[in-house]
Length: 390
Image (cartoon, rainbow, N blue to C red; front, side, top):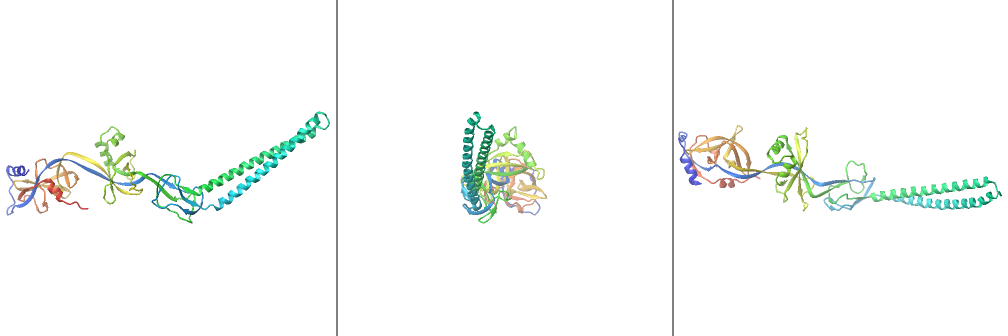
């Protein structure tokens, strides 16, 4: 490449005259080349468990015991809290007594029915023989019907008493607050002695199923239109399926060790924010991610045969980006249009072409038309010498 660059520099026709009185300074120069390069679009995300269930008490009561701690893994149906049940226990005893009383009433009512039935059976043949008046039989039958009605009432009373006891026992069972799903306990908002109930605005805690997590992020309208235009597929679903797997950059700058997949996009643009929401899913087998985490989703963006120069070879002045091209051992500031910046490389959309020679290092001391002593340099050595600022 050294020979190519020197040849390109020396063979330019009609070289520009260096500034009068200026002395040539040594400057590293490179040849503009093309590369296949992949960068990323970055969007801030909010992490949520795949399932997030609020834990609430089904009855009102004071918390007597807390069986779990924040961050603990629990299984579906596992007891989490126990509420005070003294009143329910007393009510259960009263309901049980009511059932026993109803059973005693039923026994007495059955005896009355049997006695009334015997009386009716005794009077029927006497009436048939005209020994007694039919009025006596009708009176006996009335007494039997009344006894049978009292028996039915006693049975209904027992059913009601049993229902009361069943409801009280259910409340006693509800006093043990159980996990609705298998997952991880979030913040515990109420502790021992707190009065809780089903109408509380704040749940006792939250259980999140985080073996997989959702990462929610938004694109503005322009970014969304670019996504539709630049992603292959006839429908939005096809386009989502054609998207590559994405990375998750955590709040500490590390890349999460599992790739994610963008699954869905809402069908409406938020009128207030002008953005549309996407959802990506990430497997979380080690439980490193929790509901409430933040970070950035990184969507790969590939360029084929892109013109690339070191970012350090560009500078901006009054909103215009420039690079110094080299002709006849002289530098000239040349406006360029930067399409993207990836890994300390500037991807040039216009202003330069493959094979152009540019100043690659120390451009802060250069001015338009300054003569230089070109030092042919490799692109990678310039880029790798620049340490990223963390």
